[in-house]
Image 1 (cartoon, rainbow over the protein chains, first blue to last red):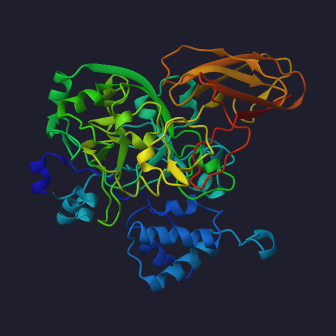
Image 2: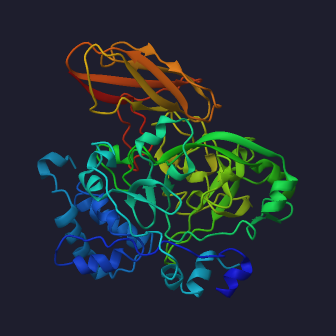
Image 3: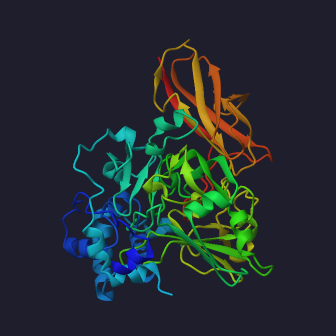
Length: 101
Length: 412
């Protein structure tokens, strides 16, 4: 803090304190999802991005959070997180015949 | 040199943040779903959004709490200039420190300038010619929530934009003071906001030297005659008229004049549009790849603000169709309105001209005769012939949605 004040940058470091708690849907990995995602962003990001992402898209989102943003997630937890998001906030996968690829 | 993120880490970023006053005072939250944005937004978005007032702001549409992303409700676009306390709020990173105007400093350095310089606000205000311009500040992702199919990201409706009078000095005058070398290619801007983890890419953006030294690109401290609101970039931010808001760095603290292209997450892979899909003029060549390019100027666009979607009107009653139009800084030439689903178009009256970077108001009177659904369309064209799309040009980040404006009224 002393360094910050000396720099004259952060005079009153007011920031975004705890917003209202957002309740995620019940599910086996809910607490894991909460712990993994809420360090960096509020959980309304999940509901906001529903319901339109399929498994591939949720997987891509979680991978981006881990690889590009350094989300504190163990590699073995990624599939559980993706499963939870697909089951509770995801779109059913398109039938194979209709996907085209 | 230590980065801001390292400072935050050093002092325990989490404690710093949580120890501060809440931005979310206890108060009634609410709003009916219809006022949470157009029906085309994802269902989950409409459910989780609420009307809520941040400090210094009127109730805006909350999309996300942290980072803060709040959208301006439609009614504030009834006026050409958006009030400061209704202006949208958009952050990529959670920590938005209060930077005191008295202690603010801008550090300008880099291998592309002759001599580094540190400026305070008093010097900025005293040593350079002050200018004021009215310009649209529009989030690149505005209307992302209307993409078909939907794409991940903040699901904005129509209101991640605003129009304001910005007062400051020309960035080119400031850069003249440090002496930009011939070899310089980009000017890299950073602000005081920071993420909660050191791993989060700091929000840093760059401009090509030609745009940074355009006479319209400003370093501003005032918005609509008042100091910049905290959540719109106080004490000093960049204003890059014509270009989307991603370049308008808030809480500006450093500029680097660089001889090599800047590499950072928020330049690539973020904020990219596919090459060849949009009628944009401005190129940012040092940042282009074979397949995509950074988003640059806004595409020509409009928004019908009155009457409202779904509004019930009486047959034979004269109606005034009103709205706003804008573009990438060439200026709006015409806005046309169609009341027969696009078969014919009539020129609307254009309102006051606040300059080529501003919203331009339009109005057109007509009288619906037939009972039933009445579609009203509006289409803007700018001074270089750029117009709006009839069909969405899909792209993975949901940018540049400028499909012709449409409302459907219920007559009878």
